[in-house]
Length: 301
Image (cartoon, rainbow, N blue to C red; front, top):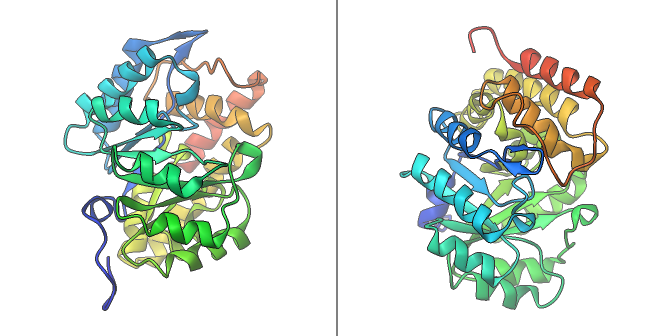
């Protein structure tokens, strides 16, 4: 939704605007990827009003998967969402090439500690790129403003996903940087303050929380775009209730919690919710996540 006098978004940015891209996890049983559950999950998500999905991101454990597993995951989602956007996380040129060959639409470029501008330029020669500002405790890099401006000046960078975890002040600063680049899209990755991040300037969402209850989160984005503030407030509160049960310490446990949430939402078998790389979590946490999914649903959902 461009404002008068703004430069138009890139074509991909225009497709993403006000859309939800769930960062989808991968269902495992123990250490074995459950291919049937993976296909069923993709078919389930295709019935919901998402703009597309993000695969191989942190939620999808992309750097931990084998090349064969990544290919299977990407193929499954590409086939399930032929007309929607599939973004593939990539930490290096090898993964970027895999994504292009697997017919992804764009890359989510994992943060780079060295030569960040050159890295984004190189990745963007494979596919359009969403840059990624990620909080440092999760392996991110606190790009300074000059670096961000140089990345956003690259013609095949369509925007930036911002995931600070809990720093409203940092999000506000980065939103200010984006105002100098009206042709680029600010994409929120802020599960813990999703509603506020949209009010602060984000015009799309790429969030792990979208792995479950995607109708709710897509509806939140739609309400913001349409300035339906009553609906926005109600949906934002429901999203917050889900985040309060899933994005909590130990933070790496959120992947398993979102698998549990997806199962509680009917997207996955209850047994296909293992995360081989995450911390063990007590059974009572699963019960709390399941309650949160029920509580976040509105009557009639």
